[in-house]
Image 1 (cartoon, one colour):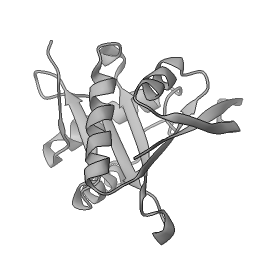
Image 2 (cartoon, helix red, strand yellow):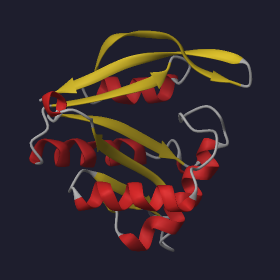
Image 3 (tube, one colour):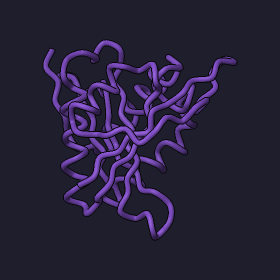
Length: 164
């Protein structure tokens, strides 16, 4: 099945929220272990789009969201040049190059929006994501020890960033 990467629109929100919940419940890739309530997610999606921050989805031939990538604003005037990257794919969409397509779209849009730094945290055991970020130029800035706690187990995370 062919997939396409497109800018997120309101019509994607419901499918995007379902995809977020699926990936979150894997307890391996996201800060959440389940999707936030619908109203909270809706407000987040609308805010990112209203502020013209990067938000892209990968959709299958039926229009179902199988992945996404966003760069969210950072709080504080002195940090207005920074965006925080979030990206995930449904299990069936991994390993097909969609992550690289989503990430490149978000990077391009970030630079066109005037951002000059994109930062992220990736769990130390997520070697595929780490390799993708490195391929696209992200550099290691440190290791956050015990960055997350899931089901009683701590996980370290690499801090990485891409500068324009």
